[in-house]
Image (cartoon, rainbow over all chains, first blue to last red; front, side):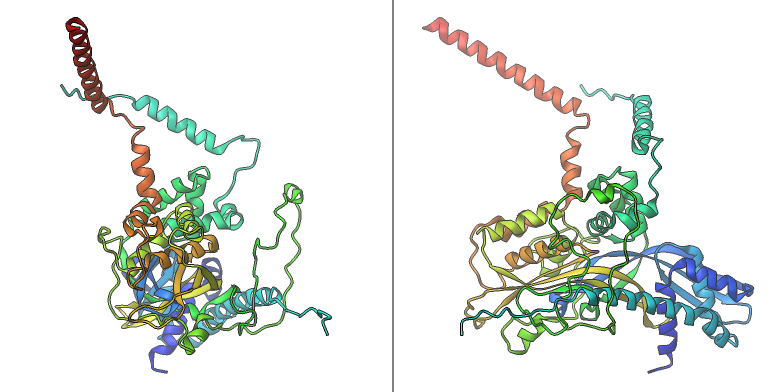
Length: 147
Length: 363
């Protein structure tokens, strides 16, 4: 655990969050604070790498779309976002949340935005896992009657 | 003499307008939305992402709609789009052992730890048309069973513990990137894998099938096939540390192949590897077989002259956008080229006719 672990976790959550849910939670949070863009939302790609044989050296698998954005709040905190997909509004909200998480409102932001997002992602993950578990094969050996 | 020809703008505009109308089809039938294609034509979307080499389900669905369901045309649209994207960076290699699997089967170990999980598969269906789908209706919820989501170990690693399978070499070398430098031979395995994962499914399948039928036979078992989602991590320069920038669904196939050993290696199993965006298991298995066939040199095997062992043949013909671009260009105007051919044939015919006549007169 280092000082960045917490920030890494919330930025990762924001990157994977469904845009619609994030924007609804953001609207519920309230007023958009005063801010200035350091980098206006920009759509680009990242080259995703895999490992040969799953465990070996890296190879280039293909790209994914990513939108990034950087901004600074009136109170001075700098927020960054790198989020999956091409949603500029989502990147802006994610950067705002990142900036607010470094200021005095962190606890409120965590409770109203991040915790519901984490819960949502975990619920989705658990649902898929439980559907997969229902398709797990139970083998049984036939009695062959040879002895 | 070369005469530049202009024209056809009106015809082209009219053709494209008609194309748009045909794309829409009968207006009495509701129009397909991009979201409908994304959610209900998932495997087509997955193929377009894999071969378009860009993971974005919404864009792939849009491309399929625009291409009227022609998947190679849709892949073309995605490839063209991706060249417009600024490259933010290269991600850390995905750790597939941390995949949240929805499917994970092994043809080699019945009792593999983690179990055989079938997932949403076409396997064991009867391949009979289901006319119930022609009628609208609610789909019952899939059954669930309590479980704790968590990573599932790679099956080949159990063989690796005994030293029975070749260990994958790790290295910190920056892998070559097809999208940055043109393909040059001989290609490193990293470049071959990049080329195969975006290669045409039909072509890679045909190559893989040829190895099963005896061209460079390398009898493959599916050691493991898994489908699921993996987080994608990237170092962010502004931050100085890595974050997840999203997650992708992947299909991974590891084959276990017989290997009698060589001068430098004891008898052991070897691997073929397939990793493809989306739920694309036919492609992932095919990729693993072709990967294994192309490894003959490093494993000290004989070159049997089989197409699947010939990296120049495989890699230069696997890309359906290159192939279709070159193939389809021959339908575009070649009036000047053809004019010269025509004149050449006329000239040769005239010469041949004269020669024949002279020969007849001499006789």
